[in-house]
Structure formats: C-alpha cells, structure tokens
Image (cartoon, rainbow, N blue to C red; front, side, top):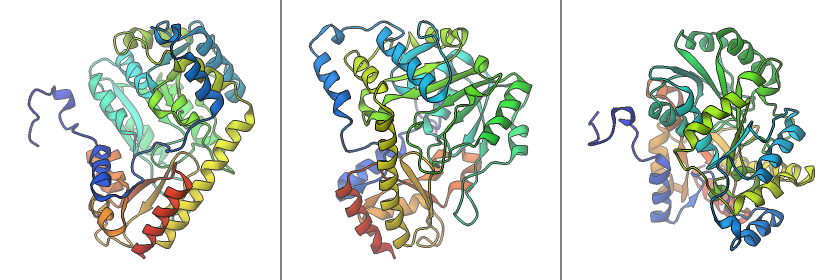
Length: 395
C-alpha cells in the first residue's frame, strides 16, 4: 500500500470515504442516490419551528459545555420514558456534536495505546477511524446474514469470546445496527453483558436508530440489564429520529465518572455546538409516543416499497428489522459477486446509486461482505418510486 504523505501512521489506509465517490457518481450520471443514509423530507414542525424561533436570540451564542440544562433534562426524561434507565442530567448526560463526536470522544477518553475494542462488522465506518485515532486496536467479530435471506443476522458466540484478549477494554455495540438493520435480541444482549462483566469491559453502545424499529421487533438497551448501568455509555442522536442529520446534535449518557472522562476529551474537540438547535431537540424529545410510532411505521412502509423493487429487479433482500437500510446479495445479477464493481456500474445500468457493504469490513474479513450492497430507503415517495422503476431494469 502506498503511504499517504504527511498522514499519521494511525490513519494510513483511511482515505476518502466511499460515500463521497458514490455521491459524486450520482450527480455525474443523474442517478437516484440511495447510497448515503439521510432523509430527503423535513422533520416535524414542532421541532423545526422551535429552531427557527431560537435563531437571532441568545441561543446563537455558546451553550454550556455539557449542553443546555433544558436539553440534558429532556434527554434524561426521554431515556427514562423509553428505556426505563435513569440518568442525572447534571453529570450523567453530555450533549455532543452528533453521535460521531460522542463515539470519538469516548474512544479518545477511554483508550490507551494498544487497548483493544471488540465490535461487530460490518460496522459504521467512523468506528475504525475513531479507534485508530485513539491508538486502539479493533477486534472485529463478523455478523453473518441468514443463509436463505430470511431472518436476522447472527454471530458466533465462540468468535466473540475468542476476540476478547487481556488487552480488551471496550465492547462497542451498535443496535439497531448500521448497515445490516439487525436489532440485537434480549438473549444476545445478556450474553454480551455477561462477557463484559466477566472481563471487566466498558460497553459503548450506539443506539441512534432506537426509534426506527419495525413491526415485530423491540429495541432494548444493554444499559438496562442488571449490573450493566455502571459500565455502559449509551449514545443517541436527534438526527435520525427527527430527520435533521445536518444539525449534528447527539448525546452520551452513563455513570458520572465515565461521562466526566468523555467530557474531558470532548471539550477539546468541538467544545460546544448547535446552540439554536438544542431547545428544538429538547422539544422533539418531549413529543408524544404517537410521533415516534408514526416515524417507525412510515419508514417501514418505505422499506417495503424498496424491498419490492429490489426483489423485482432480481436482487434478494435481507430485509432489515430497523434503520434506514436494506442489504442485497448482488450475485444473481453480478455473477462474480463483486459488490464494489456492481455499485460503480449500477448508475449506468439502472440510474441508481448504492454503497458496497465491503467498505464496512476490516480488510482481513472483506471477503465476507464482497457480494453485499446497501441501499437507503429514507427517501420521498416519488424518489423511491423512480428508483424502484429503474431497478426493475436489472431483471
């Protein structure tokens, strides 16, 4: 591999993300972009109106370092309401520049050079980068799709146990999971909790898709399992729940000593962010249950529309239990099983852009995701309809 000039050794191998390449390809070919996971329809007016009203007021200036008291109280109340987990907003809740900063701040705060992080792959791409910047070592464990495409992704418990060495310090969990759409079951969470307790691991759990869970599936936080609150940091975000991914307002909750450690690192990253958006997010978190239920059912409908189109285009779908994304096996229409080549040719073949799942794997395990591709369905009705019509050309 050619070494990138000036770039620290910790980040050698981390180039421009696949999302930039695919988005540029979508523009160049006038394709429907189902690659990057952001909605193209607005959030609830009850949230947007509060942000509009806050602009031009004192909210434009620096908020308190940990976040406004109003937002921290709203986060604590929201987590108690939906997850039955209690946090003191004074010192157990920290507002961050999106979930990405919460995760990066936690890794920078917790890891010494050589400390290991056990996590599942395919994985959201910021995890590997955050671990590398902190001087840590990723120990990925593969999730495997169901052999017949029906049912959830699973992992081998023996592989998780084998990944935990004496250098392991953090278990990084993502549920609901990007990019697979898997929601970890109660049994799986208890297994992981037992391992964390037995090995003294800190658990960092990314739950940004907590409300985007589909019928027949329930999301629970590992922090609610007895014995886990004391060693778990829970990451959340307003972006996915309220269709405001550009606001970059996230949070991390946990016992005061862990949150204090993250705050120490976070203060030297963005310090603060999103002043006018913080009261708006607080208002959103207090919306009635019906809002969150409708958001999930609306997205489930969009999932079903895209799944039908992909199926009619000859692409078997591993139907997700949550999130914005559907994964397909491209081998029926790409005989060599090269998902990256498929994605690069798809704009010309069908006028649609997707993302190859292989980019979410550690290079040593890339073969596991080579034949898989991720499509986002968090798009307007007319966009999905056009994408479905174009995907039918593959059949």
